[in-house]
Picture 1 (spheres, rainbow, N blue to C red):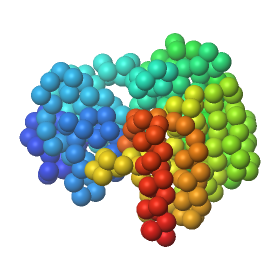
Picture 2 (tube, rainbow, N blue to C red; picture 1 turned 60 degrees about the vertical axis):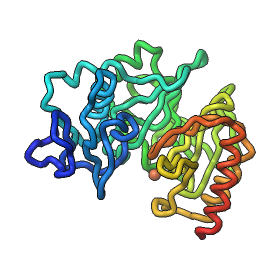
Picture 3 (cartoon, helix red, strand yellow; picture 1 turned 180 degrees about the vertical axis):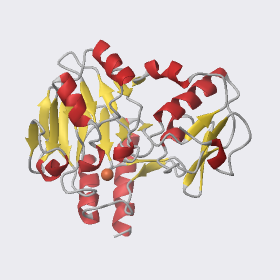
Length: 289
Ligand SMILES: [Fe+2]
């Protein structure tokens, strides 16, 4: 629960505010950029919502903030929006919401599939979300991109009887995972679902390509809102930057139009533009060695 007495001084006056417990994970800015901005090491309210749509987005951000750092003095009950999750991105892909502090506020996603639904990385295990996922057919498969973002995956797997996929090099974070992948070659997990090992951020990092359209990138690749281009983080590369460069370059041989990251901004681009930006990113990363 956010504390008004700890409000960040940069907040503009009004009903919504961010307090000093914020970990600057970017969740609120991704959900409601009209309301939340970034100042040094923290989010803050740069504009109070002016429309019903913006107000609802601000409430979404409030309930998804992993550290409960967003408050509101308004009359809306934040619980009223919790049953809206997961939020549709583009059929059949949804954003789960309820980012977990265990994954430093990482995003997780849900995919509806006639062969069994998927979850990519894990949100908080919360009853409103669990009930909604039950109504959508449950979760047959949980794809874990890497060790940092497993959060409550074990609870979801036990509740739904899901199979968890993780790379052998990340197994310490989920030692009882049902399916352990090895090596560096892409592997089809089900029709239209391809696991692509992308070592770099961590040794066993993997991305998931769905329908040659949606690429779930964990902490391997995201989108820089300011520069408006694909990006990868050298500062948050825990294992090998040279290997992360090779893994980025490898992705240029795949076809996709969406990048859906764990941390950072998602983006939808034409496949040709996506490939062009990937090649350009690889060049920049080599200069940054
Ligand atoms: Fe990570």
